[in-house]
Length: 418
Image (cartoon, rainbow, N blue to C red; front, side, top):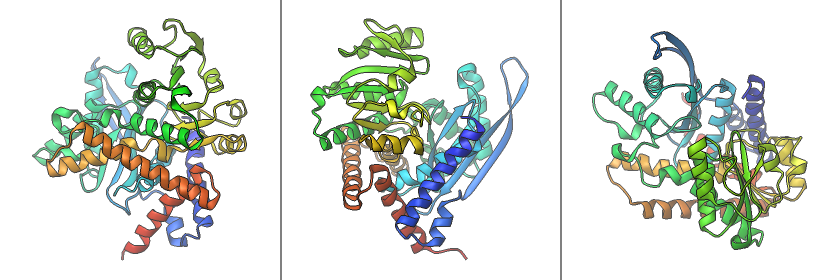
């Protein structure tokens, strides 16, 4: 995301919070606090590259609010990430943890780098140095990172190990999204996609759409998109298109997802998988379908392409994939939107379970984790839908109402120190 786009993204989130606060008569003290991030940390650190030279990287860790508990949020490795983008994502995390009512605040981290162009040893050295730099903010009771775009369970393992070395003992609860071998939770890798799947099915039920007859398009073939697509296919939905960063594969009769995923594994893209037609990411968003899952990066749906969207339901698997201008156009078209702070909250829900397991050294099996996730996501969806109908609001506004109310209640109850 460019600097200007990052600044706009943060301004969009701040405006959303401000509008909801005014609509709900939230106390001024709470409103002005929610409009800003509590802590912002920028680090510049050297990394020894494989060719022997040293390269300086820039990283961030931003805490938006920790009124309801330790701050929680992923770490992103991307060449175009910037501080304003991280601020926006941290604020969205505060809303996300509040709307599903788990005892966390919101945070986000990032390093400006291209992980696809780095060796594993370079990524490990970068990760360990970045973890050392932000260790003064981290802790199981303070701030708990997780994977995001460009990072994975191995990166979390390096962060956990680096933090533990500084403490002199293992601290598994300092990060979530870890490998199972060092205290990760079963079901965590699939959690965000599973939460999206639950959101899709609940939205379809709300609109009277039979999943067995529904056509689905998924933008994004990473962890969230691929898992959402696979789970929906197992529920009987007809996946007609899926894309990655290069483009997409389309078959109106229904994709063979196993073929598409295998083709991506072999070639790096789903483009050209058997019996499919190539589509661009722009074309994919405009395909006629019942359900569109937007699970790539920010700003996928903008003012220019929103009028061309033909889906009946949009589920936001990515963070901030819809600009405010596009949101209004889509709502005016009668499209039912499940917002990011609700739809993709499955990951942080299971991160909470992993954190509790790490603190207590007590573990649940995958069926128990999935049942908890399904139950909590369903309860949150129903609460948001109830508020939307009661207040005659869209789902995004309703979700924000619930989240802001919970954040304001926590801040008001705690007061201001000193």
